[in-house]
Image (cartoon, rainbow, N blue to C red; front, side, top):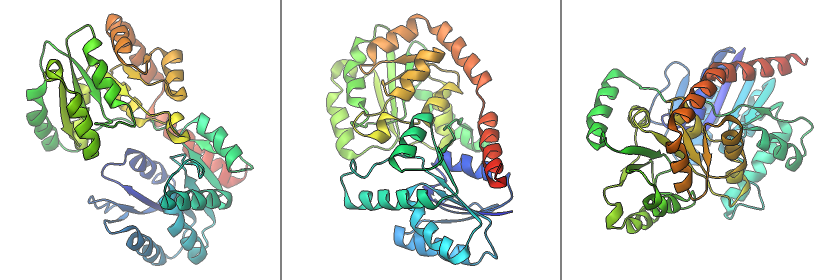
Length: 358
């Protein structure tokens, strides 16, 4: 079977995209067209041009393939080239991964509303739809008027070092920030006000034990300015803003922290019913979490006892630290039971079953 995966995601930074590539490469002869500097010589090409150029280039790439048995469209921006490729290549089956859940009546900008229209239209034409958790599957079935409930492919993933050299460079860069007498807390949402990192910073002073908060990730300049203004003198030795890190640097930093922060806003459906890969990146490094009270996050904290859901953060951090070894043991038990391999195999088996029509 010949497969073509189209994604406007950057393969260098997009962990779900890399997992999808890993999954579909096991199902046949996979070809990919994505964005990013990292050239996937084994599977296909990348494109760093504008969106319009990406659409044209994706179509040209598909045109060079003799045939396509399974077309995989990763997220909303893949739907436009996907619809055009369907017209050209007439693939036998189409799989659509709706990793996000932006709804027409919630997005503010024209381009976002257009994206919602194309995503919903493509969902009605796709043979198989994938989403990232059970809550989203139920919402999509009702809001998109689907005859079948989407398959659920959770964002279960772990951080990996890319090369030994990058591991060494990561240690050289980040080891000086690590102090033995501090509790290290990491947030991978950077300085995001929408994700309440301002609340996290404000309440850090309430944490009872001596700690340091690392804010890692790409931030809007306006958000970073707000966060920096919140760092009063008493917090200057407790907060480090690191900016965007590569995969090896993330792996090194998270593996040397004690608690991971998983925080999302509550202002739209996509965020309320978040499907966090960051959660699993923390858990697979063996560290408990403190999350916001979004339903999927609160559910896993309450059911599995791998952390605490607390929108104000400080009490949750104190609770985890007060019973740290218990939470660590719960994390170990959970990650031994819920594996990346099982998550991947479940998706492959379900897709193959649907393709067989059973």
